[in-house]
Every structure is written in C-alpha cells, then in structure tokens.
Image (tube, rainbow, N blue to C red; front, top):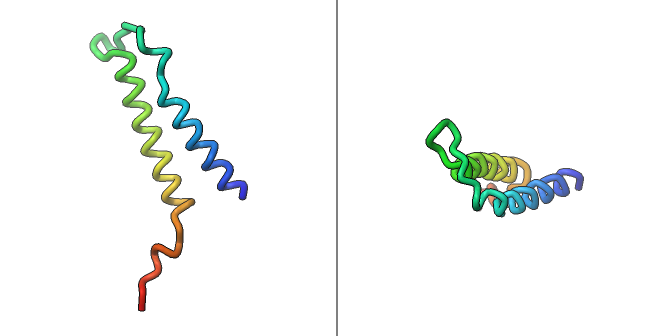
Length: 69
C-alpha cells in the first residue's frame, strides 16, 4: 500500500511540475543560447520518463504477462 501511495504522489508531482507558469515570461538564456523554459521542459521530459519507468517497474499488472495456454 505504501508503494502505491508513493507512486500516486510521484504522478501528482509530475503533473503539477508540468504547469510551468512561472517561466512563461522569463527571457533568461542558459549557456548563452537555451531559453530557460525549453531547458525546464527538457528536464521535465527526463523526469516524466523516469516516473514512467518506475510505474512500469512497480505498478505493471502481472496478469498481463501471463501467456494463455
């Protein structure tokens, strides 16, 4: 049950972090060429991919892997 709660909180955090309204008007460039909003979305994509990997690893329904006779 604890694992399910942690995964639910992870998904909620990823959803909340996707709403990057605080960077909409920021014109800062990272490394001299990369807009900070784009860099945020790059980092967000890596976080979302890691979250999906954790979900597949720990929440995948076992009955889907059973082969029919």
